[in-house]
Structures are given as C-alpha cells and as structure tokens.
Image (cartoon, rainbow, N blue to C red; front, side):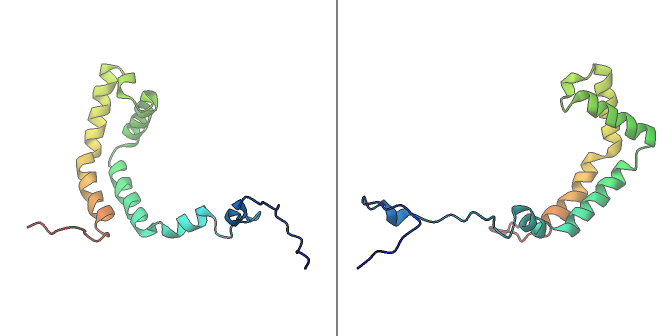
Amino acid sequence: MRRRASSRPERRDGADRYYRPVSKHRESKSLVKSTVGAVPWLTLARVAMVVGKHWNSLSSKERARLAQLVGESRGRVGNLSVKQRLELRKLAGKLDLKGLGRELVPLVYGSRKRRGRKRG
C-alpha cells in the first residue's frame, strides 16, 4: 500500500498527534467588531449627557482654565503650584463631582443584576 503525500512533515516520535494546522487567514470576526456589539450604547449616551450637563455648568472661561490646569499638571497635581492647586480644587468643586458620581452610579451599575445575598 502506498501512503498519501501529506503537507505536514513525518514525525516518528509520536509528536505528530499534537500537530494542528493553523489557518493563514484571519478569522472573519475581528475583536473590534465583537467588542462594538457588546458595548451598551444607551448607557454610554446617558453617561455622556450627565457629564456634559456638569461640564456645561461651568462658564466657558472656567472650562478653558480647568482644561489648561489639567494639561499643565499632566495628570499629577504635584506638577502644579500651590495657587494653581487651589484654583483647580475650586473649579472641581464647581463641577460637583460628588453629585456627578451619585448620578452615574445608578446608570452604570443599575442595569446589572445583583449577585450575592440581599442586604436588609
């Protein structure tokens, strides 16, 4: 009997049973497409509206100054002078971050089912 010509190399040590052909073509579903489908777009839109409402509560001068301070700090408050830190704190207080958090928590976590035991 003749053996069929195979595209894979012959191995006599038994390792050929672990051989799995790998497709040279990409899968039809990309990670981006599957992730986009899983994003809760309505929740994101609501979050954007709430954040926008708080952002627009500042005047245009205050918004520009806040953006400038955050840019200068490069994410670290220690990069600002004491005077700039006080100004940043004042502007953040006007944003009402605590209230923003109170509005966002039910939007983000309200759509998920509770797990674990009930408290009460």
